[in-house]
Image 1 (spheres, one colour):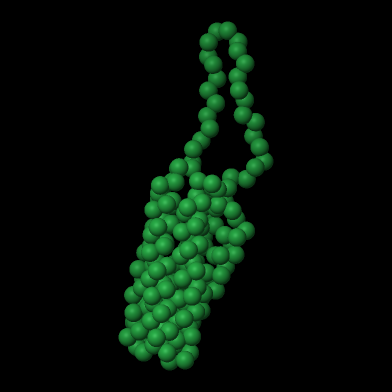
Image 2 (cartoon, rainbow, N blue to C red; image 1 turned 60 degrees about the vertical axis):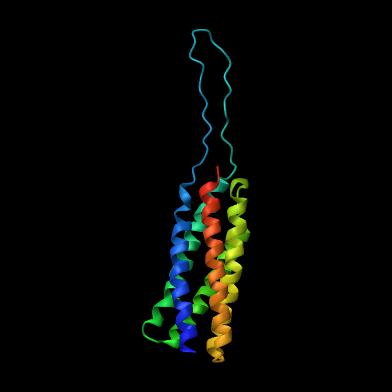
Length: 177
């Protein structure tokens, strides 16, 4: 049982690093609309862009991802830290924190639509959250029932989540917003 639980700790540490990369956003830039006035001596009509009250979906979505990614990273760290002290209850509490954080992240993403330029990022991010959810649940169930197979399945799920996070980060880097 101990070996299976320790392996999940190493995976959580690697996933936390992937989340840090996602938080950086891949340095995606916003395309900005500029309006250049004609400077010739003859007066000419210019196109004036009127401000609208439409939300900045990119900024709002990015804020959700950064905020919730930080919370998930903290939860994964909290799940891995008890490993050094061989604290099984602490690992279980950490898995519960990861699970709760994932549910909140999913809910926040449901409330905040991704802009068109980040749809691929959003798909990979959501695909990463699902195995984080199942992995943390399997870890809790495995610890509760002293079932190493469930803990191992949780580790596999969280490993898969980390791979999807890498895809989300890559998609964000490639996005042209």
